[in-house]
Structure formats: structure tokens, C-alpha cells
Image 1: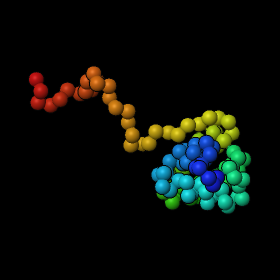
Image 2: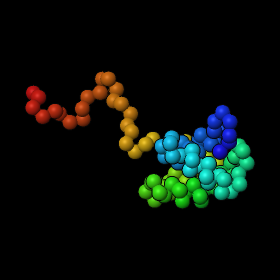
Image 3: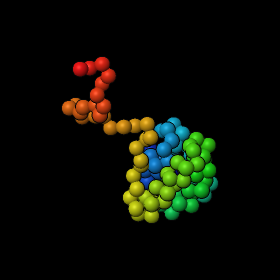
Length: 109
């Protein structure tokens, strides 16, 4: 990863796409980029070369199916597909203020 004020836009996007915490992801990316002697800041080509190392490191924290999906999203982004990070599996949008429950509440009536 680049040294100085912070990660590049490319690095920030890859950090987001990998789906790990803000504590783990930067180090994971930095080590994978170092493995391929990436430029500072890295190019999309550098990150593509580092992708197998990124995947290997992600497997320590995420289920294999999620690693595969996130890796595919990174590839699409790096190849110009403009992938964006998926919403976390546990996150959901808040219900609108005027939303009604889908089932009647028990004991009301």
C-alpha cells in the first residue's frame, strides 16, 4: 500500500471489497502487494497479480464461497467493471417510518 497520507482510491476500494474489518484489510492488502513487488501506489495490474495472495489471506477469515464472490467482484472492478462492495450479510436497511409489520401482531385486536 502507498505510504504517506493514506491509501489510494484503488486501495480503499479493494479494502472495501475484501469484506474484512478496517483493522485487518489494510495489512492483508499491503502484504499481498509486497509479495508481488507492487508499485506505490499500486496499479490495477499490481492488484490483479496480488489477487491470489489476497484470496489466500481472506480464507483465514471468510467462508470459501464468500472469498470466491468477493474475489470475482474485485476482478470485475479491476477490469473496469466498476463493482461495488456488497452490503454486509447482517446489515439491512431500516424500515420506513410508516412501514407496517408483514404479519399481524399476536395479542392485538
